[in-house]
Length: 212
Image: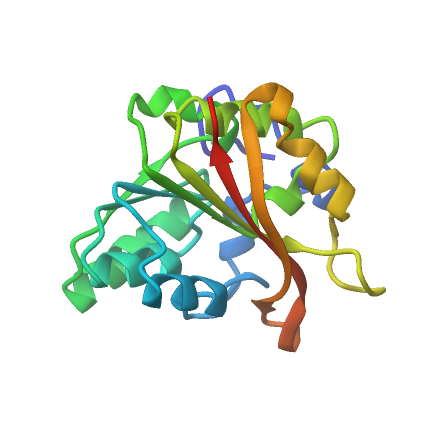
């Protein structure tokens, strides 16, 4: 397996599948690459639910970041898959959208050296196992000041065969505990679009504030 970010150890998902995140984009669209932003994000954007600057963690081919940037928000999308980032930049150029994409490890976001008012995670959290999630949360905290907000859209475990890594409500809440400076403001049932779920897969949509 090849690392896209120098020195990065393969995640649990990469170990299970036996391929890097970048390889997911080599033979056609990845399962999560639906060619448009997630409805949860478009609804939230329509309500003015974002403050800039915005970080899209695990942006893939960038549809969520592109949507927000097209509406005027200052957005940075990061991913470890260079192929996906190249596709995102090409789409941005084609559509004439001013948006930034960069290669960065979601488990080491502090290396970006920037802070964001809003962070969105559409389908990244559920790729991490229980051992990786605390590290991911700490990584998110490193780029979020008190009062900044995080939105998480991830597979839920409400029904069988949701997706490869469904997350329980308890596990999601445990990832962002008050003891680590988080406040889970809202956790609602939603849907996440994939190429294998015609009406979207059952998901959680969480609104989390960096309290301290």
